[in-house]
Amino acid sequence: MQVLIDADGRVHELPGAGGRADSAALAAATGWLVKPEGLCRGEVCAPLFGRSVPAAGPVELSVWADALGLLVASDGDVLAVVPSGSARAAALAERLAPPLGLQDVHGNPVSLEEHAGRKRVLTTWASWCGCRHELGGWQKLQDELGPEGLSLFSVALDEPEAARPWIEVAAPTFPVAVDPAHVTAEAFGIAQVPSSVWIDEDGRIVKPPTIAPGDDQFVDFTHVESARHHDAVRAWVRDGVLPESAAAEIEPRTDDQQLALAARRVAAHFQRTGDLEAARRHLARASELAPGDWTVRRGGIALTGGDPFLGEEFIALWEEWNGAGRPGYRPT
Image (cartoon, rainbow, N blue to C red; front, side, top):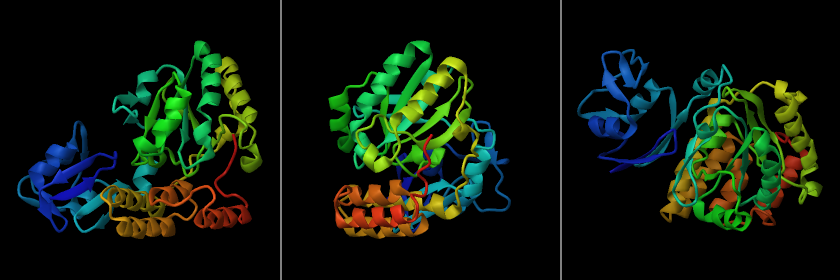
C-alpha cells in the first residue's frame, strides 16, 4: 500500500508500490477521472498532452501529479502533493477566497463558505505560538461586531490534540477548525501566526495575510498592538473602509516554497507513525526550501518534540529572523 497526502490534506491509502498506484483506486480516492478530455473532476479538466495516465491498471503518480500542476514530495511509499507556484497564482488571480473545509477538534466539519454573504475574518494561530492564549480576545471582537455583520473563522495550524486544551479553555462561540496538513497556510499564503485574512460578502480576499494578534499579552515580542487590527476591522465592518495593507498584492509563492509544505506533510506523516528520524529529515528539507516560513520551521520544532518557546533551536531561529529585520511580519 502507498500513502498519498492530497493537496486538500486528505490521506489516501492506495494499492501499489514504488510510486505507482492502481488507476481505478486513485480515481475513486481523489475524484480525478481519466476521460478523452484529460483528467477531469466535475466540470474541471486538465489536458494530458501525451502524458500516460491510463484509465485502468498502474499509473505513475508523478505523471498524474504533473498533469494536475502538482508538486510531489516523497519518501518510499509516502507521497504528498501541493499545487505549483504558478497553479496557486492562477487560482488566486481574481482574489477569490479558495474553498476551505476542515474539521473541529471533535471531528465535525466546519467550512468558511458556511458564512458566505457576511464579512469574514479568517484568523490563524497554533499551539506553538503565544497566540494560543488569544482566542478570548477574538471572542470579544466577535461579540462586538457579530451583530453588525462580521463572522470570525479561526484555524489552528495544529494536530487536534495539540490545539484542544486552548480551545476548551476559551470556549469560543465562533468556529475553530484544526488544520494539521496546513491547507489554510498553503491556500492563503500564511507563513506566520497570528495572521488574519479578510474576505468580503462576495467571497473576495480584500486584505491578504497580515499579522494580527487577538490581544496584547505578547506585545513586547510582537511589537504589534492588537488595536491596530481591531480598529481597522471596525472601520471595515461599519463603514466599508479598508486599511492601507489591503492594497497589497497577494504574495506569490515559488515552487520551492510550495514544495516545502509538501515536505512538511510527509514529515508530519512520519511523526504520527513514530519515525522521528524521517520526520526530522523532511522538516530539514522543508526548512531549506522555505527558510522564512515559520509554520514550517517553528511548527516543525514542536512537531518533533522540541521546545518552540525557549529551546535552543527556537532561540537560534528567532535571533536569525530578528537580525534580518523580522521578514514576513507585516502588521495590518
